[in-house]
Image (cartoon, rainbow, N blue to C red; front, side, top):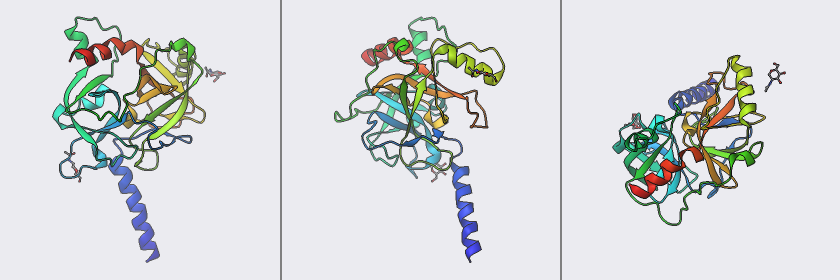
Length: 271
Ligand SMILES: *[C@@H]1O[C@H](CO)[C@@H](O)[C@H](O)[C@H]1NC(C)=O
Ligand SMILES: *[C@@H]1O[C@H](CO)[C@@H](O)[C@H](O)[C@H]1NC(C)=O
């Protein structure tokens, strides 16, 4: 009987890991649950599911409320689902929150640049805005975009947050950790040391690392990178991308808010 129970237990763990494998989240020893109201502007973005509204396999990524009707997030994962099947969960650090809104429109940076006849300089612009089908209530304050020049922030502690899966199980609560913002040159060296190949550090990337490592996972993409509670970037991915998540010098890449400020402000004010 004892053996039977422990086998069942092992099987449950295994099933859980299998079920959640495609939406992994922040991993690392210093990652912790976010506190209630610590990040009121962070949302989970998932596929709408009529039969099971809390099915973990439907989680796509993380987003950041930037105005009462717009959420900023990464483009890649939300573009894999039709806009009308997207759902945003907000108002709690607990993923089972019942405060949810559907999405009316999706505006990616590339779509915006195209309609404005703006030449896109960089190749990876994994960022978009979701226009919600309703208003976020006024008691939830959108995040403020930091006016601080990046040069003043290098080597400082910054904070990131994201939903998804940890290395052991699916977190019911939003995960967060502090990381250090690396100077671009240091980041480039660190990546080149790992890949043994020359690397261009794109101008629109911010780079973070931490000892012990804290690594971004798919479900964290679109989540905020914050300094003094204000938004400086959104999460992209850890780099180099590797199945071995514990390469100690792996860095995290984030997109600079400053680089996309015109896109964000213009979209929020005109659409
Ligand atoms: C909805 O949830 C069920 C599990 O209860 C899952 O099997 C199904 O794939 C989900 N459907 C969608 C559209 O995500
Ligand atoms: C790169 O690796 C060498 C030896 O492996 C080490 O001495 C050096 O400090 C590393 N540089 C960085 C930026 O990590």
